[in-house]
Structure formats: C-alpha cells, structure tokens
Amino acid sequence: MGTNNQPHHLESLVLQYKTDKNRYVFNLSAKKKSVSRGYTDAVSLIESYPVRNRNCRIVRGRISLKAGHGQLPFQPVPDPVKPVKLYTKPRYLSEISPCIFSNDEEFHVTKYAKGFLERHRDTIYSVDKAIVVNYDRLKIETPYGIASIDDLSTGCKTLLNILYLMDSGIKGEALVNVDEAGNNVLRRILDLVAGSNISLYITHDTDCIDNRYSFILNGKELQDEMEFTDVIWEDDTEDG
Image (cartoon, rainbow, N blue to C red):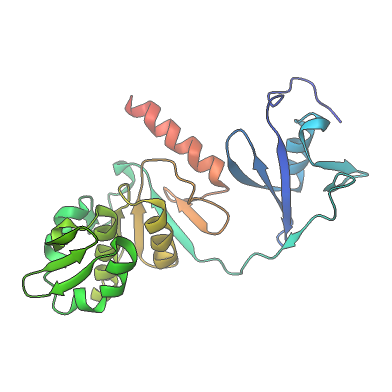
C-alpha cells in the first residue's frame, strides 16, 4: 500500500461498517468523527494511512477488515432518509420567513398559546425536569424550587418554539436558531424537523451531525460530518 507523504502517522483509522448504498463508514480517532466514503474515496483514505494505524486492508480490490478483526459489518441505511435542512450564515436566508434567532424572545409569544404548555408538559419535564404547577401564572416546579416558566433553559425553549411552529401548521419554510440547544435537545430537534418545512440555523460544530441523518447544508447535500466541520471553520475564518 502507498504510505508516502502520510499526514496520519499519529492517528488511527477504524473501518466500522459498510452500508447497502456501497459506502464505507470510518472513524477518525484524532478528529473523533465518523466519515462516509464511496468505494474509490474509501480506497484512497485507507491507502493514506500506514498499515499499523488501521484495522482494514485492500486485497485484490476488495475492502475488508485485517486478519483477526472478523467480518466487516453490514448496516442498511433507511430509504428514503428524510433530510434536515441546515444553514450556517445569514446570507443564505433571504427567502425564509419566519426566522427565529432569539428563542428566549420568541418564547414570550409561545408560552401564552392556549393549551400549548399543557399539551407539551412531558417535553418540559423530560428536558428540564420541570413541572408546570400553575398554567395561569406560568409557574413551574424544578428540582431547585418554584420558578417562572421564563426560567426554563434556552434549549428547552428552542424545542418548545419548534413544537409551537408545528402545532400552528405554518406554510412555507421557517427557520429556528439552535445554537443554544445542547446535544441531548438537538438530537430530539433533528428527529422532529427531519423532512419538515422547518430549517435550523447553527454556527458551531457538534457531534449530532452524523450518519444517522441526511442533511441539506446551505442548499447543498452534505456528504458527511467532516464537510460540515470544514464549512463551520470556513465561516469562522471569514468572520475573523
């Protein structure tokens, strides 16, 4: 195998599985990321690593695990995969309305919607461990005592604002900023908006962008999470 000009001498490459779309999914140890590659790109990636730094090999054109690592797992990909639409810069948003950038401010409207908080009380509890104890006065009970509904975390408010948009049956495309949603909430949001008319605005890298979802990033199909990371870094460089 060709191992000249190796940039990966301190990294390891782990081939995790092959999909029914003839794509190979690898884990890059140094970046703590999974990437998906078609056959040709997978061969190039494998050959760019020293033999001792990878668990896979190419024998007579066939990609497999090295001896002693067992059979290469096969994992089907759900078809069709409903995409999640992501945007990383305001310049891509000219035709999208409404755009919710401050979830704290938007929640001042959401919380007064008739019956909304009661319908989604389980969501409030599952995210913030808060129970609405007075719907008229908008009071909640938390592990720390009685508080106002406004004291919910911004991540919880983000999820509730998205649920409110869905309950309202909006037409056209809407956008919600998810920058302040932690990974536990963001995964729920991804499941919720996949295939819907609600897009997400995000300006930071996250482990939630992975092979479990299909993404449209700034109007183009996202190939894998490494491409997302590259776009985030490019945006940061432009802003800097």
